[in-house]
Every structure is written in structure tokens, then in C-alpha cells.
Image (cartoon, rainbow, N blue to C red):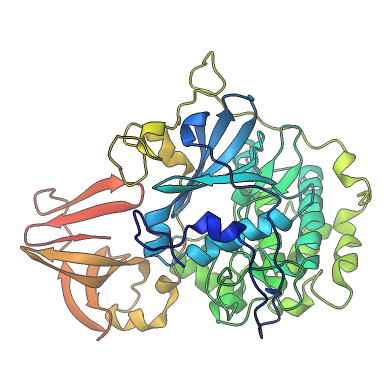
Length: 474
């Protein structure tokens, strides 16, 4: 089953979600046998039923915007997903799984799904709007958090992760950008697009709605990926605990523990477990982070036989009332500095133009909204590529040279175009390689002269490299 624009004979994704499915045999240990109706219904709304405001975030195939329902005034975080991209990149199962999982989770530390709807071009999920923004923004605005603030936020993440793992799920993308704050300042975990149900999960997963079978596929973001994932080991609950350790480090220091000049160098530091603790970290904080970043995922607090009891008893969490955690007063939220004020709380610098999505008559602009403010780029999080860590590309480098970025692109010459692997090194140098034969097909000569080499950015995710004789684009 796939989602296509104008697809003849293709099943409708949401109708398939809402149908009752028969019992199917399943050897993976993931429960796929029960039929059920969704708690969050599919509605017959259109995007024009909402007043769309600021952009909360941009992903590879989706955008999340603030959306106020015109008839009720209720504000949602509306996740808008591009059907064409989902189909092209074989992401249908991931989207279905995220919808199914969110529908069944019920915890104050997890964003709630209220309803879904769709149109010709997009799928929509109406999620709980967390008006306090991302934890990442709090760290950025404050420089770094105090230990009391970090303790509170980390405790709320632990509380939610204990529930998620207890449901037999691995989130696989825990990071400050996916930890949202309510208007009062409490943490909620968001973005279950990479979630993995494990054997014995308490979540009912519909057939054809599951993530990768091996659970060792590279997902997540470079700075928070555990070493076992880079070594293609199967995923475990310890993956999320490693990411928690990285996130706690970032709360206290203002930067991720393995930050470096390129993804390649980040991955090298992760494999080497190259951690450098600032001198102002308390002994308790340093010890907890050190344990969470254990190379052996089974030894990380929360993953062993003692479960989360051991993690909660760590001295770093001394004084935390785990029973009444969500009723405690959270840290004060640092507000965003506005360049200018507005009479409407829905009109922001990064406002969304609804004519560029849905069934509007205006032509599609790669789903990015041509009239959107340039400040939209601030919200874009570049996703990591495991390809830059692959040792097979090292044969094309000179001694001391490293890979900064790598991507499959189209090499266009006159009327033909071919897919090649484009490698950007720290020389700087651009090499394009035949990816199947692993043969260098040429170099793009680096030049500061725009007549010889120029870059044309066509959207937040697309660009063109123009040279005298050829042009390559992703």
C-alpha cells in the first residue's frame, strides 16, 4: 500500500488506517494481530479550516506549524507531511507507525495526537501544541542551564522514557529539539517518526506499518547516535539512554559532547568515546553522564536488570519527588527575543503561507512556501548521513583529508544526467564517484570565481552546483 498523488488504484492511507484488519501471523514478536479503531479520528477538515502561524520545525518530509482551528479557537501543532516525498522515499510504513504509536500512548510527558486529515498533496496530524518551544531553544537562549534546571528537565525525560520503554518502544531520536515545553514549562517528548517497537511491545502495530525489521538501521541525529548503531548492532533501549546522556551534557554545557567540524569527526569521537567534561560539572552530573555514555548499552542506568529504579536513585536526582514530578514548579522559561511586535499572536516572522499546501490553486513550491520569510531557515535541522562515516570513501581521499559532507546527486550534462556520489572534503575539494563501481569520475575544480563555480540554493533541501561544463543537484 502506498500513497501517491492522483494514484490510480492506490489505497487511501487514512482509510487503510481506520479499517478493521484481520488476524495475521507474525514472527517478529511485535503484536500485529488485533483489530482496533483509532482514538484520534480521521476528520474531514481542510487546511483552510485553520489559521496557520509560525513554523515550529522542518524535517525531511514534513513541517510542523502552529495552527488555530477557526471555529473553536483551539491551537494545535499541525504536522504537514508531503505524500509525494513519502512515497518516493519509501517512508509510508514509518508515517503509519508514528500515527499508530501516538494514538496508543497516554502519558503527560508525551505529545498527544488529537486527529488526522488529508488532501491531495499532504497528510496532516493535529498534535498537542507546546507553547514553551523546544528545550534546545532554552539551552541556546540561556547559554547553558543550571544544574537544578537540568535536573528537573532530565527527570521529566526519564519519567517519560520509562513509560515509552515500558510499552516496548525505542524512540531512537531523543535530543533537545524533540523535547518540547508546555506553556507552564513541563517536558513532553515529540517526533516518533523513528520509533521502533521491540519484541513483546504492548503497542498494537497494524500490518505494513512497522519500521525496519533489523532495528539496526541508522536513524537519528549524528551528535546523539550511540556507538552500537554506528557498528550496525541491533537497537536496544540503551540507545535512548545514550541520547539522554548526550542531552544532559548539552543542557549543562551548551553544546553536545561529541561536537566537531564534520559528521565524520563526530562519529569518530563517538566510536572512540572521546568525552571532555567541563570543570564546572558537579561530580554527580559527571558520574551520571559517564554511566549513560557507557560503550556497553546493557550497562547504562535504566537498561540493566534493575531497570529505571537504578537510574532514578542516582545521586544526581537527589531530592526529586518522582511520584509528584508533574505537579512540581518547572524552571522559568526564557522567552524568545522579538525583532518587532505584532497585534496577533499567530503572525510571526516565520509565518506559513497556506496557499502553498493542500489543494490550493497555487502551484507547488516543493512544499516550502515561496513567500515564507527567510527566518524559516532558522528552524531547519540538518539530518546526519551515515554515508559520511562509511570507510569505503576513504580510498578517494589524500592523507590527512576528511569528508565533510556526502550525497547522491544528479550530474547533468547537456541532455543527459547520471546519479553520482558527490563528496565534499576539507581541502576543500569536490569529488564525484560512480557509486556502484566505486570509481572516481572526476573532480569539480574549486574556485572562488562565481563564473567558474557557483551554488544556487533552490529550497532548504535542494541546491545546484553550477560549473563551466556541468551541473550537479541533489
